[in-house]
Image (cartoon, rainbow, N blue to C red):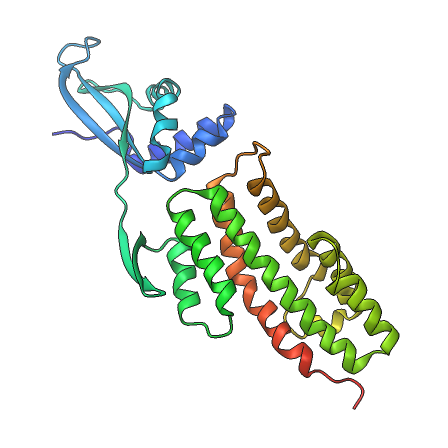
Length: 286
């Protein structure tokens, strides 16, 4: 009967820590998303009499398997270093397997697709499918961001998220413009239209919008924006990521970073929608 000297969860935690200490951050991230399973063998180790070989099987996500195989020697050395051999089994290194994807079927836009269960992608699509506050065009881009991201196509997914964020910003600016029309002078409103609505680039539009939003910080706080600069800088991060992905910059985008960005977008979307809905209705000069 095989009884490991170190349980599989402890092996995983220690392996991740060791890889991070040795500067193998990307490899550590792969292990974080993987499952560790011990694979005892009948073959003798040749180290101690009657001692058999043991492999640490690292079941990685499908899209990361090639990278893991390219670094099998590093993983094997770390596993041998961590595992405590006994008289029955000695660790002979690592093997790379495939992590099973637990999928969930979901229908969206008259299409049935399979997404990884409980992933950020399927959670966002479920959020969108029951949300009438998000306009159709933005939903389409967010849907594409989720489905392409789920397939591991992070460059394409980043571009789609960037398009959705640009639509959101434009709608936010249009709503703020109506607020200006109701509560500011004609000259201030024209200045807003010239500098914000007619801005030559998305960066300039966001920058000019943020300047004016900070002047009305109390108003935006009532919509849920506690830190205006941080909230709107997040849209700029998405814009920059979209530019990096949509042009031949050669920059590699990390899937974990994209998932975090997408998850934060979902969490913050509600306050942006609230501002879009309430700004045109706000009249401080009755």
